[in-house]
Image 1 (cartoon, protein in one colour):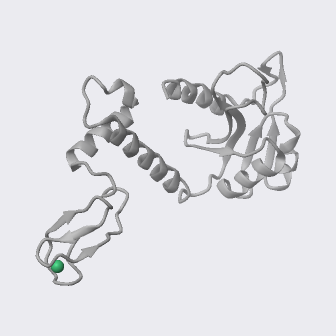
Image 2 (spheres, rainbow, N blue to C red):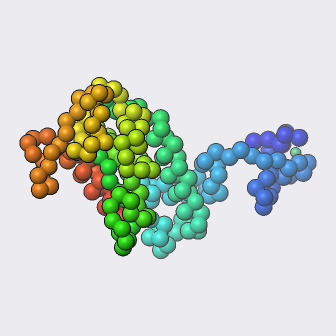
Image 3 (cartoon, rainbow, N blue to C red):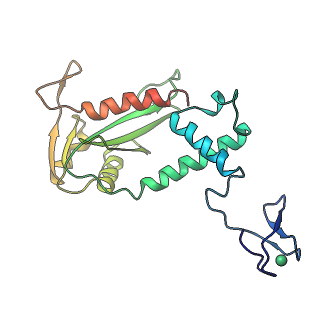
Length: 210
Ligand SMILES: [Zn+2]
């Protein structure tokens, strides 16, 4: 909130409905809040929450040394994750040697297993062989869904390493395509997709408390 649009002064009461009332003239107005300003904590508190976010400390583990109420912390983290997802869109597509793979994240619930299992999120991932990763949820486990992501996040002419899933069959039209064949869980020959498989294992481990 900078200035009152009626009198130009800059002191306000915060109203319960989210609007602001000018302390001088009583004019009420709304403010378009940035993501940062939408969390009603001090900058120091927000920085502390971000540090814990980066260190991977879930809100329920912060309860012994809370920065603020759990609901506010949860809200802060929802906003942070939304910001990360937003920023993800502006990253340049990958070029060169990339590995593509899909997996599921989510509850190890009883019931149907596999790609359609309830409560699971299908995630598609691309790793560049310098270690950079992009991972994104996809709605269905099919060719259209993965090719959409490949179009959006890699440049034509890349070198793609994938498993034998037939959904990747058209990749050879987009660049070079190396299919990793596996026998008894081990890749045949020297080519591999250990990069993305290692990332899945790391990510699942990291995200387990959430
Ligand atoms: Zn005013």
